[in-house]
Length: 322
Image 1: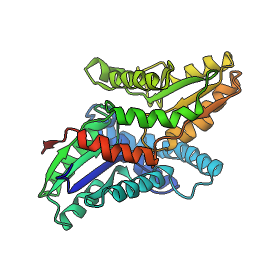
Image 2 (image 1 turned 90 degrees about the vertical axis):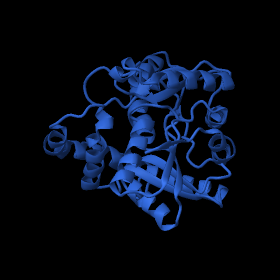
Image 3 (image 1 turned 180 degrees about the horizontal axis):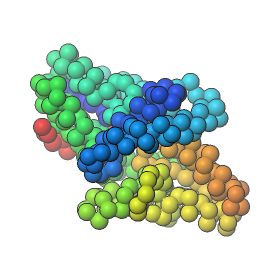
């Protein structure tokens, strides 16, 4: 940590603006990355561009528009929260040049960030994907994206990469502290993780084990036994379950007060704000439930920034990659 001069924080990304074309561009980059589907499919980008996105971008636009209308957003929430997070980290690390890069959609891109480091004469960059749990579709994808860009632009520096931080007690504590004000003896805590294809797990992807361990750690610190669920399935095939839809339907029928936290996300976005507040809340209420609360993500919470800077970063293993 004392030798760190450059820190690159890698976030998934978001449509740059609320319009169907920008949403389409984001989806093409995100879904067109072979890491997302997990396989290199020869005709996939052609099918995506000409058959899936012409309709899909308008379906997604409807969800984003509803989220904007319900919350009075001026821009994509992931962009707002990520900007605030970056500013807080930079303030806490005045001697380190901190850059934020998005993998897909909005700016600054990974190329923008690497070129910024080069222009400032920083030759060694520590790369931290903002995904607590490890997976081929999270940390591996982010690191591969950075390395691919570095090779393409012939980045002259050294890249030291970290792979996940969910085993840090500081991260567990920060997440637990955000949840604590929302839970009481009558509520059921649901930890909702972004789902991934089951075949990944069968091939040794550590994501499910990481989510389960994180759930145990958070539950132990809070003194509760959380319910584990998975959300945001995309496409056909078998995905990790039980699904959040099935889970809240059951809890709604039992009229149990529910608190939902989404620890896989470091900042709030469509998957937390729209999916939970609109889609999941409606499913829960239609099943008979009367009390569902969503816990905000870590975002730029001061305790989270302090934990990241003082405990997580100094203890992460950054390995040179090229």
